[in-house]
Length: 327
Ligand code: SF4
Picture 1: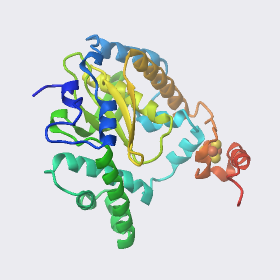
Picture 2 (picture 1 turned 60 degrees about the horizontal axis):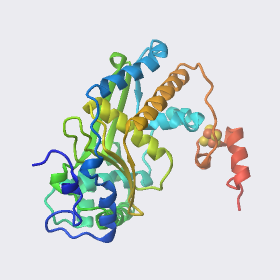
Picture 3 (picture 1 turned 90 degrees about the vertical axis):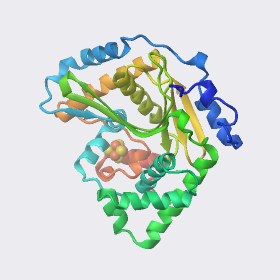
Picture 4 (picture 1 turned 45 degrees about the horizontal axis):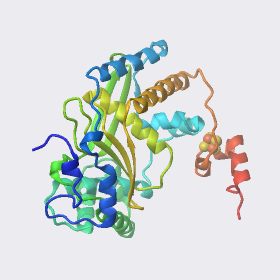
């Protein structure tokens, strides 16, 4: 068995033996496959260099931390958008809402579709996913159990629709592509005073020694927003630090539209991710220690922000854009 996704594995026009592809599946495959000649071979000390650089950039303020600072893509996005909203959300206890369940169930369906024998319909997979989630006893399970039959049926129907679109527009996942779901990555900086972490929705392929080969794919059940690129670049950094070789490609797959956006990974991309991550860590430390005032940066988030009523810039933005008016 070949050890990486190559153009001969992922790059065939029919998606593999016995598989015929829809035009949309072929378009997706053409974008996420990487010809062998485009795969980059990286230096063996790349991960060590990046770790050194990140630690050097954060050494001045890490000593101020009395407990570990956990950083995920959410925190990085928060300090690069409205910090006041982030602080307000940190103070609120987390509550599941119906729209959030869609993505969770959808991801579970994709996971099951890889690991269960072929042949299940989208609706059958959704049923298996909902049953599995409801049996695990966590917050999402409790939330689903608290819903009525009609609400649960509506969620099932919505996710089945999304999953069918996924099956119609994403090439069938072959085991030769080494697919994984929910692949966790964790990096400890400064002996664990700073912890960087992430979990990749879907990966295909894998590196071969120092040659990049893995494709990191985020499955998006909502619309495209610019920070999705930054999220993936942070994941490229995590992958490099943990595995020692960067991913070959980053991809956001928008399930509603059945379309993928891809970005090739090179050292310039990693460098910009290091910069953003180091600057964001500094800002998070300042906010955590109360050494900085949270910036208010109005945006579409003001429409649902829990502190919008008492936020001057947020109210001004809502007035200006017409979102604060009744009609
Ligand atoms: S209303 Fe807008 S600007 Fe104000 S805190 Fe909320 S998101 Fe930020």
